[in-house]
Image (cartoon, rainbow, N blue to C red; front, side):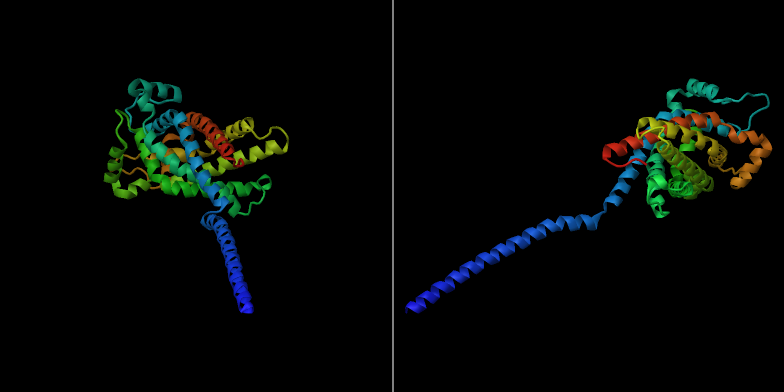
Length: 339
């Protein structure tokens, strides 16, 4: 009996200790699983690089919209100057928009501040779509082309990445470009964007929104390649030679140089694109870019390709400076390395 009682106590004690051990093991396992689950979920859902790429897209759109709001009036004058030469005008009648200053005064006197900001809604839509892609995709395209160290990236990689990002953005955002140009070129009282949407649809259906898309894509490739490569290369050159350090002064100098380069390289394509997009309803003066280039040079001379260059530079200069400086500042606040 004594042996049976001792054996019974030993079995009870064993079961109690075993239950405690099993409970401890279960708790450890559950805690480990709970601790590991968020990590696995985070890694499976989105990598840090992908997250940064998406944030860059948003910041690029916001910085470009801010810049556009600052220079939209100058761009409206530029559009009026470019399309005026295409409209029939009686002999001896002077141009309403002979240059940026007289054109600006005429526009303000006849249409007020609202006239200068015609098309701002379409412009904002354009920047949040087009510019977010052409800026936000620049660094992913550089990585795709083999970049490993931004400080040692070859110039051709920067140009190619900028061109590819510009093409991707412009191909998707051409409808907003068409609406912006038509709204800016329309003289008289301002009309809502939906009125212009209905006019474009009546003029040729959805295909009309892609009028001038070839010119837009070529312009975007040249513009983006020039702008981003010039800024990127100038910035690293100034840093490598110890002239300037990372900061607002460096961003200002690099973006100012990029703005001048963009205006010089894109003015001819910009004029051709504007003429094609702004053809009157039911009329077709040009059969593509080359036809437009040939007719413009034949009828108005080769110098007309740089008509509107002054407002073009007055728009691109401040726009590029504001765009890059706001973008770089947003990146710094977010904790992201500069371009």
